[in-house]
Image (tube, rainbow, N blue to C red):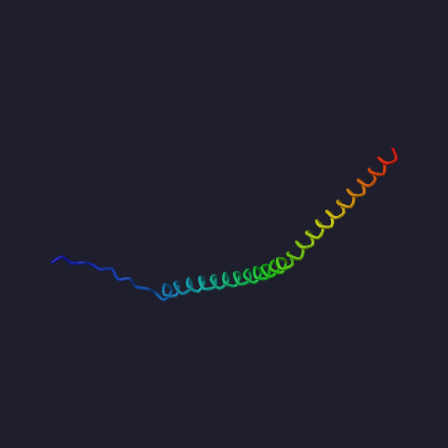
Length: 94
């Protein structure tokens, strides 16, 4: 019969710990990333709140624009009537 040799892998205590150290590094890196993401999330939430507040105020500003447009049209109408009145007076005097 042919003899088959098997190679047994013998792990020393150093090799046993290597995977644990690698795992520990990955866990620390993941924890750091989670911390960074939480900070970014908090910053983004504050920004969303600010933008929502500005959006809530926007209709008031849009109303102000409408009021300015109405006032401008009223003034334009008055000026046009004054010009017509002055033209009428000038035509009478000629």
